[in-house]
Image (cartoon, rainbow, N blue to C red):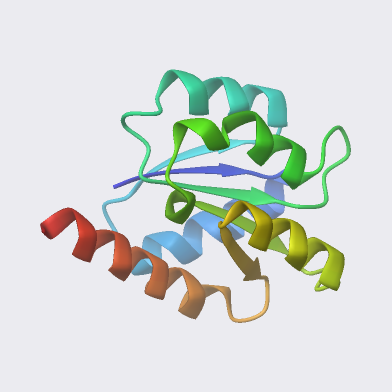
Length: 124
């Protein structure tokens, strides 16, 4: 499985990588602090990436802007917006796009569910 993570915080990217590797030890992680670089890789490697995790709160672009730049290439169940901010307006934006809303609290459990669903769909 290949996962792309985009977050302008190096520490947050490391934490997310550790968490995902706890769930899927042999995962291939692509990590980008620059959202524009992450978007480019998402476009180039769209047939290889299984899941994209994007932080909402970044300096140069917000997560919704990043997702809007790549959503046409992916199934909605392949994308998750990660945030500590649980405002209804953000949840509404996520629901409109049909992607996963992921809270930083309880993230491992949320990702476990998503990855299990992806694995089930791939095995059919």
